[in-house]
Image (tube, rainbow, N blue to C red; front, side, top):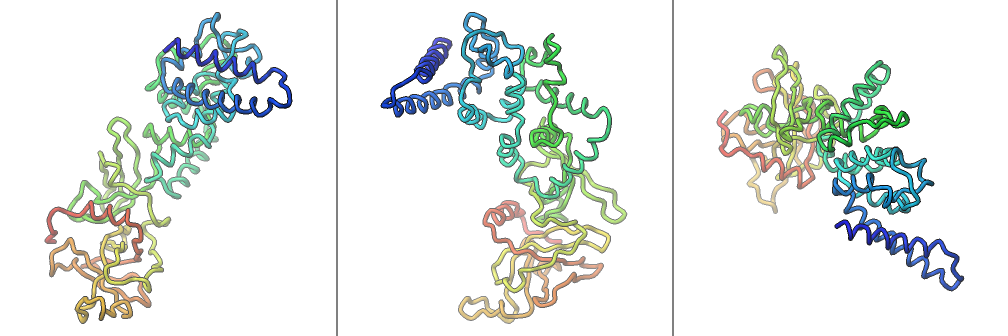
Length: 399
């Protein structure tokens, strides 16, 4: 592997020396071809090396006789022995960006510890936006973003918290990097403060705050309280935090009337979602789909036990009127002012099995005995429908 690495670097240096020599005009196209080839070689080879912790350390700690760092790079590289050699930082910016874009979050955190130049590039938002979306996109919504901005604003003026954030980052990195990477060097210009500071509102900082479990944010939980029978096929708002030890979440539900807030641990990813409606759980959703509801459509409807409770979203389907035989050719249910909603996970005859709402002037309807039905949203996404079907109880509910 060492011989392969030295051969690749030597070939890259040879190509670069050719590119820097004056060439006749007829050789312009050949020089461009060599440049493109060298960039492609750099991306494929160096990216593989960067993914390997040992080789990343080798590149940064290579002996003086074989050093790849040039004296001209002293403004870009900190505490790396100087020589007249070549550095991976001599790669064209486009090639280096392509490498960094292929690194997972843990590797980007390793790169942050290499030098100031790479630290500045590796904490940039454009590298972390994709990671944020890939890992947390299914549970992060506008409400969570507002919570993060509020969190940043509330902490920005508190003294001493910057050091706390640095310690948090060091703890996060220490789980993934060798001890020698975390040990500050003697150079005064490369202090621990330089190596660990992050823009307080950066996406990387947000990612690490969630990853470490130090940031709580609003989301919604399917079948709350470990699938309690009273919450089957429902989805309720909660404040959640990630548990990196178990790769699950903890949730705290808002209090219901006189009932204290409930807590739940060990919630898997598949029971969480970002709120589809950006509104308070106490607000009545304005239904804008009533004229577009047909028998067989999948819906979610707000429901709460009484006026003091927040709404939860409950899954159901649009049914046929009692006067309709269900035939597609003769069904006129979609033209009626009354919409039948069915919750087929309850037994026939249950008071929770079916309800009706007005298509024209639907508002919150209900009573203290049966609860209150609120706004309706039509589910158009097959992925959302599949989630509800996956959560379907193994037995029909009798309550």
